[in-house]
Length: 222
Image (cartoon, rainbow, N blue to C red; front, side, top):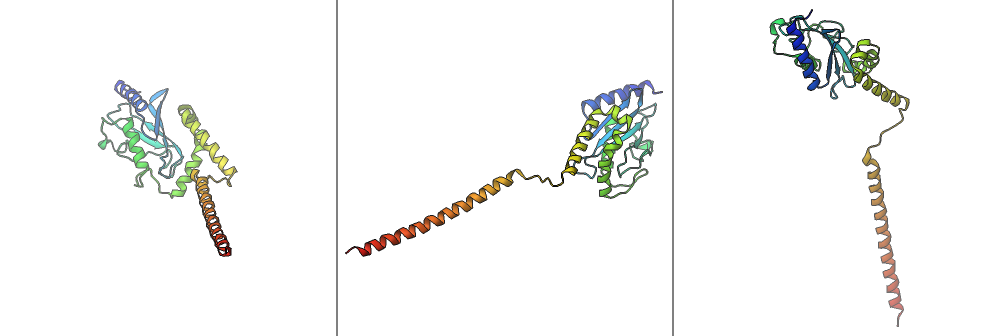
């Protein structure tokens, strides 16, 4: 059972992450146990995790914030082993480096930062960029089948369903090519240039013919 200090601190941390969300990360505690939190990392745009949603778990000790939480990743992602304690300076692997001033937001920020790196540690794995991109897509169905994900993160569920629908639509119509907005205007400018050039040539020829006709008439005058 959580100590009164842990309960008070975790409630404060929850209010903070909702008021000032960590970029690309959302987190919620279990309604029945404030010591057990779940988080979702949304893959940043400039990373091989882009498009993916990754569910993870934080288990706080009853005397938090004086001791760090256990950190695990649940959704397959190509960076961390699933359902395995991660060895991080902000996790229970290193209580000697833990700072009680750190909060849930600090933990989530540090986790995302380490996920985007390639540094090895206990619980990490090495995979290719292609594998990570493939897992980003497969994370959709994995999470939609996970009961806690659908219960705790309904907004992420809606985002996944929308992304999945767009992805399937693109697969159904692979011949569809998006034309840049300025493509047609460039063609119009090109055609206009050609038309203007042709008109100038015709005008020049007409002037020459007219001058020749006038010269002929002048020579025929006695």
